[in-house]
Amino acid sequence: MRLGVLDIGSNTVHLLLVEAHAGARPAPYAEHKRSLPLIRFLDDEGAISTEGQDELVGFIGEAVAFAEEHEAEDMISFCTSAIREAANGPAVLARVEAETGVHLMELSGEQEAAMTYFAVRRWQGWDAGSILNFDIGGGSFEIAYGQDELPSHAVSLPLGAGRLTREWLPDDPPSPKGVKRLRKHVEARMEEAFARFPPTEAPLAVTATSKTFRALARLTGAAPSAAGPHVKRHLRADDLQLWVNRLAAMTWDERAELPGVSEVRAPQVLAGAVVALAAMRAFGVAQLEICPWALREGLILNRLDALMLEGHLTRDGGRGVGHINLNTDSLLPGLRLGVR
Image (tube, rainbow, N blue to C red; front, side):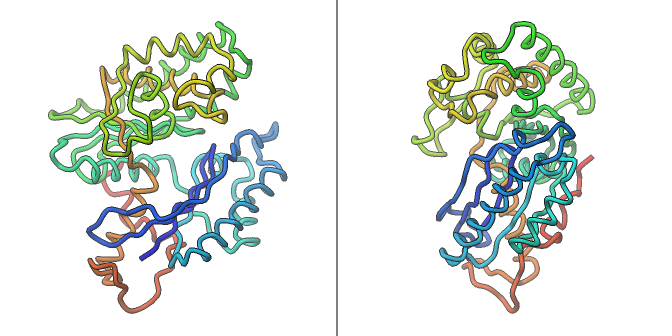
């Protein structure tokens, strides 16, 4: 079946179409995306402005047309912290549904962490042993740990790269005092988070997901995205420490010239690096591996599992009796299992 996944993130709005069936990996078919940092459209009260809402509604309308043009059978639609934490989030969701017919599921931070971990588990396999995964978004930072398909521990912290840049590092280039204050703030929050996790069990795979982590790995010498998803990419804490200092001395334009750093993400890559380094130091991680699968893949795989159990999907990709509407809150039937 051809399945659409509409992801309304803090930095980018992205529709991914995949060819998917139970028992096989989702194969990308086509995509439609746009840079839309919703955090930049927040007013003084934390509400998404009319301009930001117009941009969002316009893109979702485009996404629906794109999905129909490419004959997608259904579409999973979700949003994360950008709308979840906006002062007028419910009103924005209502407007989107009224004007486009798309119901955006509002994922909690813990659900984000759990579904991202689930995707990492499927990618890494059972041979990985325990998994500790970090994910940096625009508005939040997720940590998940466990031995099973869903994590035993998952937390979401308000330490997204876009949020921290807006609140702590608005100047270009950033002031040394601002960087120092940010590092202390992030380190304190990370130590609090670490205390909520149990001792890790060996063997342990430490992984990271998100464009921010991929960009940081690229900065420290990892292969470019053009090399494909199966090339191993790692990020070392010692290398990252050097790049935190370098990024702090650069302007946004200078960062945009670096490998793996886009113009849109250049302002916030420093904050992302500070968070990544603090997480690795707090959890005693010297090196981690970048995983190419993350939240979108987790949602796809979770849904395919559910459809197969319900008898609506066979292993060859055929459909059973009845039409499945993937824009429902029943998309995540077992997501809370095992999450504390």
